[in-house]
Amino acid sequence: MYVDGSWRPKGIYINVNTPVEFTGANILYIDLAVDVVKRWGSNEANVIDYDEYKTYISMGVVTSKLRDRVEQLINNLIINAHKLGENCLSKAEEYYR
Image 1 (cartoon, rainbow, N blue to C red):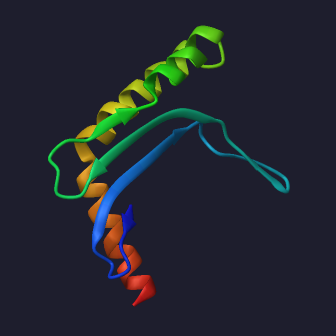
Image 2: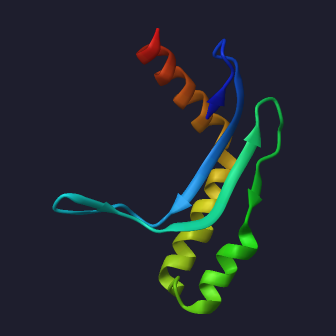
């Protein structure tokens, strides 16, 4: 979620990555390149950098099991992006105000 200086929402940007792994003092994850974005006030969420994500699949970096989970996640994010953004904005307003 990103906002302007007056806390008016501008849009939602959701980065898709592998699950976070905690390994002692390190936090590891792999950015899968694909993202879901939605301008505030728009009825449409879009997937960006999908071609780069597909390259990871063809290289074998993304397993078929992970691919299935990511595809399901992307579809859910497209449907629920606005609600997620509203929840994020509400929590940020509580924290910063």
